Amino acid sequence: MAAASAVSQEILNPCLSIEGRRRLQGVLKVSGAKNSALVLMTAGLLTDELVELTNVPNLTDIESMGRILSALGVQVDHSGDTIALNASTLSSHEPPYELVNSLRASFFCIGSLLGRSGHARVPLPGGCRIGARPVIEHIRGLKALGAHVSVEHGIVTASVKGSSKRLKGSPIVLDCPSVGATETLLMAAVL
Image (cartoon, rainbow, N blue to C red; front, side):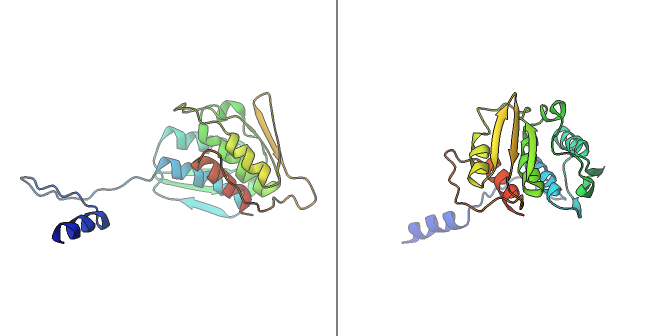
């Protein structure tokens, strides 16, 4: 019974204990996660209110997303590890190809723009090419929510017909599990 209890305890409380010659001391600052910050930045498109993100890592992808949002008319202030976004000045629903091409996460803009205004035109994403990660699940999900979606010449155009410009709730089952598609669909459906 003692062995079973020890195994159960390991499963319930996974811990790796390392004993060395010297005790470690000090302070460790854990940087924010790039992928979370990129999604949160695009979520900032959903509101006219000031959005402030802290503990944002200082990385090229973060700077690229800031340029994309600025091109859409968003006021972006990046100071240290803090980014302030004000999308009350949003003036475009089509991020420029030359900026989108450098960052795969730029495709998240389609969900926020569609959810906020009922239409978006976003070039197919570029950036990181780790494995095959097509955006078909994003497109299928947006269609399930009632969006009209077309892809022509590398541009994905999504719109909501009708006077309400709102998507409709719908059960969605992704054929291929995708964190990015889930994030896009949540942002599209939230308003």
